Image (tube, rainbow, N blue to C red; front, side, top):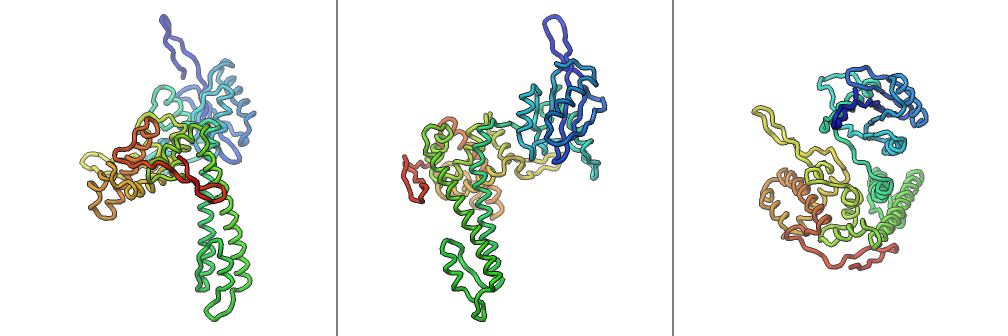
Length: 394
């Protein structure tokens, strides 16, 4: 198959080499073809062997009788390998797409064959259709540049560390619960541990005590790392030289939005994505509705959840906080009119709808400065410094 370009007097047909990657940890599967209906040329190479990738591309061009300067269009599924391969291929002159795996069409039969060869062949076939104009065939991932991707590391590490701290806390509590004991886990835990006694007045067994002490030391290590990262985040928020810092400070002027939420929204969405409309924004967060309307059957299936789970989780939390801290805003009044008098399930459904509307309102606020209707602003915001003290910033 060839790409067709129309000029003023003639129609010129330019050949194209299509390539799909099926990426594994130990090996990669490559599928080459030049058109629909043709059995793809399948090759297996060692994972992350970029030199062999380019060699296979040259061999494929010779195999299909293509000129050396034939353009190459490739694709692979978004996953563990991230964006480095995409950047490498672009640097080598290969047009590449990263495809949302959840958007790839599959056979709807109950059982279907699945192998790396079949997956690669399926991808290259869909790549041809996309190149020939089926733009709604699948979802293409918007790739951030290296700097934007690197800026997301801080808050993602913070989220992971806080989850680890909770795991250490629960593990210590679980070990104590096995002896019928309980204690609050904080900086003074060791002093309380010395005073704990079992039901018969005896001290904790030495083996269990040693395990708790080692677990607590890991809890303290994670706590120190969290403290250091939060101090670094505060320093960057206060830095007037960064445009993303200005967006964060703008969000912090809204009552009910703290550093965690403002930083995450800017680093994940507002700071680098070229969002075109509110539907795209809701889809990116996985907050888009999924109606089911077939014949006489009509129902709402809930949100898609096919988006950024961190932003989706944060927006649900922000929506509950918005009702508390911005009760007089138009969004809060809309929620109370629509869902406030309902049962628990209805209110939970409504909070998702509020989260979607709030995300759109915050996006407009960051882009245009339009304050959400009825929202209350705070004149000054307190930040926590590296030593734990509270500092006031305008």
